[in-house]
Image 1 (tube, one colour):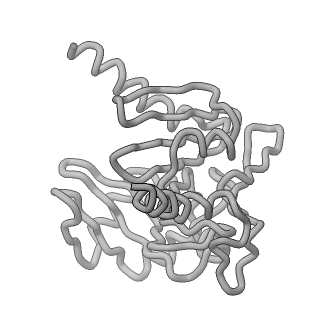
Image 2: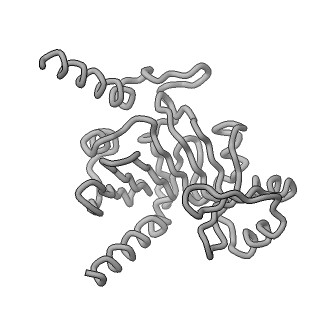
Length: 228
């Protein structure tokens, strides 16, 4: 029994320690102590910088330059929706933290709809969600559009205590279920979703635009209350 417990402890340490120990996930050519998820710079005017990018200001081209040319750009659409334009990385080294990264473009529905009309192809992702590949001309033009949000999915599983240790106490804690909670940091423009049954999600916006993260949560909570 003691041996089994020791093995479990080693596995847990292997998953969590990279979020605590600088250099544990070091990648060649990447400074393990910079661009970390909790290194959020505030400008005192409602703006922020994270990963060398400014949500609401930096463009998709800036994302490509900062995080690498391996970005995949496409429109992601649910049935009956125009969709959102996103840039996706399957894996990026954010300091010593490895993560999937999604940059959501701040594009008008009319512009995205026009891009869909000129799109090369579309394929289904999970369920009925569609991934729509842009025409080369639109792909180039997309680089000039600003991003409104950055989403990060770390490869390691995090618990609430780990998040609080790194980011500090949240300004608001919104419980979705026994296994899922949102830790809201309005002053940082950050929402951390801690999910005991899945991967954690970190969402960044400019603090002045925090309503982009909070309003959908409040609407969902209100709808749930009405349904009950």
